[in-house]
Image (tube, rainbow, N blue to C red; front, side, top):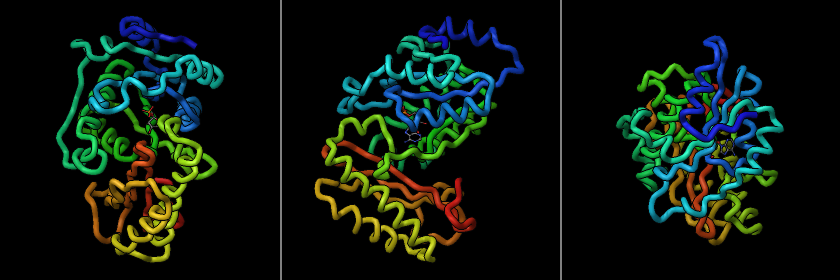
Length: 289
Ligand code: AMP
């Protein structure tokens, strides 16, 4: 496995590949867990060469967030990637990414401003900036993103479409702990009792899914069911519970047709957690959108 930490070395390596070599790319911020690794395994199965980037992107953290304390576990990460058979790990520095020779592309869209975009206005501009720069450097054929960060995934699909990138975005299923808690690098900040309490997020999403499967269309009633489950846990503060119509990316009051994204964000013991489920009423049981 090659570990490349400078932009020029990466570009040199990239140029050495033949046009017919298919490249799969998984951008990450490191602190790798099985959620990241399942994206890597998907790429290893689909493509000739898998590239993983590890870059804790300062632009997607606001001043009061955890950029300085974000878990950095490079040695462990490299061990895990080597074991899987990754070809190249790209670990650029800030100067490589925020370098005028690398272009970025962004766009305006109301979907940028709701849900995570409302709570963390700096976040999506920072993500789109770094992902478009990385796409221009890596020039992959396929890029893998987790449904765990559903709004990010949908915005990256827009980025590819509007920016004219010839990259196929592959959606990876959310990998969960046995308790149902979605894996996240930030779960390390939770105590074991908080981790247990956090399993109510998944339970509330399962409840929403079951209500939909049983024909409930009223979003307020679905949210009520979810709140009832979450409110059983003390110390959890709900930021939002939302149902978005995926055809138009706006929040709906009634689930009448088409696929939807049910998502939520909470703060538990000072740690912000997000989770979601995709649901398509046209294909039962739960589609794997
Ligand atoms: P991050 O390192 O948090 O920026 O995440 C890198 C990629 O891993 C993103 O595409 C995430 O959506 C994805 N990811 C994070 N957690 C999970 C998970 N539990 N299951 C599947 N993918 C995940």
